[in-house]
Length: 241
Length: 308
Image (cartoon, rainbow over all chains, first blue to last red; front, side, top):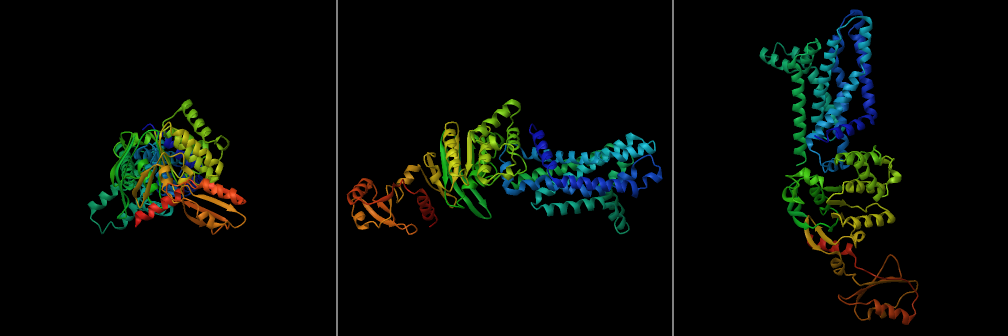
C-alpha cells in the first residue's frame, strides 16, 4: 500500500491534463446549477433544504462519471503501456484502488464546486447545514459507487466509446430503476418489487437525501464500491493470465 | 542468476514459445537474436513479468516471476520495444514517476534521476513532453527508466532501433559498462549492432532455441568469415582472384558494379594473397575490407533451417 499515493498522484495529474475532465465538470456544474435553481423551484419554495437539488444527482452523475471512468484505464491500453506498467513492482489491487480514489477525488472536487447553491440558500433562508453536509456526503458516496462500476467496465474492453456507452447505459438503468419498477408494479409480484427497490441506488440515495445519514445506506454504497473494486482487480488479474 | 526452465507460451491454440530453457550468470550480457516474429519480445515480456508463461518457470535471482512476482520485478529493469505512453508527461516527470514507483524518496530519488539522465545524456531534454521527442530520444528515455533503480537484471528490447550512429555508439558503450554491474538480456533483430558487447548469443526460431553460442563462434560459421570485399573503378581480373590459394568463390555485388566479395575456404586466410595480387597487378582499389562474418545471414540461415 506504500505506492498508493504515487498512483493517486499520477492519475490526478492525468485527469488534470485532459481537457475532457474540465469539459465534463463544466457541463456537470452547469446542469447542476440550472436544474438546482429552476426545476426544483428552489427560490419559490422558500425551502430550507436542498432536497430538490440533490434529488437530481443520480441523473447529473450521468454527465460526469462515464467520462471520468473512461479515462481510468483507457490510457493504458494504448501503445502497449499496460505491458510496461505491469512490469513495475506494484500489485493490481494497489493500481485499481489508487486509480479509483483519484477519480473519486475529482468527482468530490466537482461536487464541492456546487458550493454557490449552498451559499444561496444560506443567504435567502436559514437551512440546516448539517443536513446539507450529510446530503453532500451521500452524493459523494453515490458518485463513488458509480465510478467503481465504471472502473470495472473499463477492464472488460479497450475501446473508449464502448466503455463510455456501457457505463452510461448501466447508470441510466440504475438511476431509472425506480421508474422501471413503477411501470411493472402491477405485473410483477410485490416481494420482487420490494427487493429490487431496496437494491436501487436512487432509492437509497433518496433516503440519505432526506438528511438521515443511516449507517445501512452508507454501508450499501460502500459495499457496492468494495465489490466492484474487487471485481476490477480480479478481472485485471485474469486478463493478464 | 537467471534460470529459465522449459518456458512455454500458448496463445490461440499455438505454441508461440516452446520449451525454452537457459541460464544466465551475473555480469553476463546475453543477446537474443532471431527473425521477426520468432518470439524474442514474448520471451523478454515473460521474464519481465508482464505476461505469465503457460508453463515453465522463470527465476530471477531465486525469485519466481509468478509466485514471488513483486520481489522479482523490484530487481528487474525493462525497456519495452514499443514506445511508452504517458505522452503528455515531461521526461523529468516520467522519470520521477518511475522513481516513485521504485520506492525512492527525497534526495535519493533526485540522485537516481540525475544519474540515469546523465548516463543517457538526457539533461538537455528533461523539460520536454515525451510525446514531442523523436523516436531515438524516446528510446533513450525508455532505457533511462530501466536502469534508474540499478537493477540486477536488465532487459532491453531492441535498444538501438531508431537511434542515429552516434546514439547507437553511446548505447553500446553504456551496455558494455553496465555488464559489470548486472545481468543483461538484449533482444535484437540486428545482431551486428551488438558484436563485441554480448558474450553469448541465443538464436531463436519459431519460438524454439536453435543455438546457444558466442557471437564470434557464430561469425566463424558465416560463409563470409575471412572473406575480402574489394571495390575498384576499373573491372578486376576475376580469374586471377579465383585461382588464389584458399579462395572458395567470388560474389559480384549486382547493385554496385565493381564491387566483388572473395570468399575463403573454411580455415583459410586469403587476405595476404589478395593484397599481394593487388600490389603485383597495380590495381587501383577504392576499398578493401576483411569481413568479420555476416551475422544477419547466419541467423537468417539458422532460422530457415529450423523451420524446415
